[in-house]
Length: 390
Ligand code: NAD
Ligand code: MG
Image 1 (cartoon, rainbow, N blue to C red):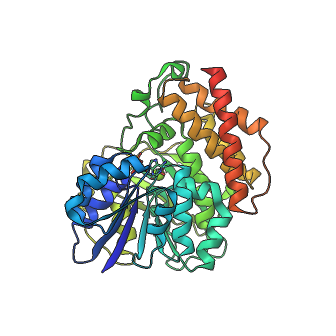
Image 2: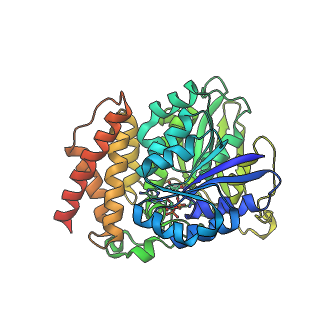
Image 3: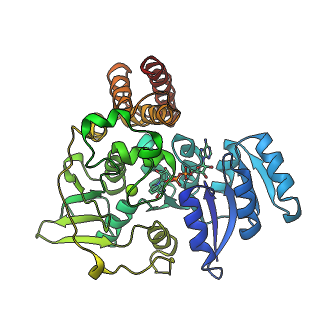
């Protein structure tokens, strides 16, 4: 019986994870669930999955949750330390890291430091902490499995005992596919006026609002380039972004002998979630089998860096190294939230990030404290710049 903690249980990934777990009660038991503010939804999940512990953001939310689940005997806690505790407890084996943004860094790192099996959806945590996170995984013998569909596809297309050395494995390129999001073909001059609702309407995937906006700017792909760099030990030049609007191929690995291995499937996150939960076995996920005969065409083309400047900014941050990716991530989180709050326009997102990257100093990342300090400084600068643009 695997005992599971889900960080971010009320989100899109959290809900998909609970769906897969419910299909295999003989294999998995939920140990702990967390949510930030959606207390009613968490209470509902607690009623169905009966965790021992539940964590929310504030004392007020904890009081509300306690009242809603008073009959279930669940320990209700709140705050970052409690998140770190449920991620590192001796009573859990596997941690689904599905909090959105920098808020997930501390508990995800705590899970790695406790040597857990870490299922990583929270790409921002790895983008921010990069080498430090990978070092923690190695030092504490944690198992890190990617949930992001592209990285899960790459993982499945690499040799079973791949050791983060592309050259030694004969890897010529990592081909990271991207749908291009809702604005792939929209006239560039009209992008300034798009609304948060339009930006959140992804053609193939249903996701949380932040990652949906990231997909519309293609910052999501930029963060995924950095994520792939750390997960697979691949330098920036080895990672190529390929636009594939149908989201059927979830990414590919191209080898020196001319072979290209790909993973395909319907666009449903329960596939990578089930893959990582059961790895190296396979379990049913609830996702329908892919029917290739119903597909009209699979298309591939190069990304347009002028339409999607965020993609170029992410490559810049990866090449700059140190705390630059943490700077990029923090500026992006602030700019996306300002856009969702209708304080700035869609095209202001990349402008705010660029200005923060130009103006805020960054350097080496010797410690998590240095990363968090960079995050704080970048957020303050991004908020000030967004206010001027708003
Ligand atoms: P979401 O917005 O639907 O859910 C986010 C979860 O994080 C919620 O449970 C929320 O309660 C929690 N949360 C938010 N702010 C928090 C805070 N300050 N402290 C603690 N908890 C907080 O997001 P999502 O779409 O499920 O995405 C989650 C993560 O997975 C993101 O990092 C995203 O990039 C990644 N991801 C998502 C998808 C997808 O299909 N949704 C695919 C690949 C990767
Ligand atoms: Mg992805």
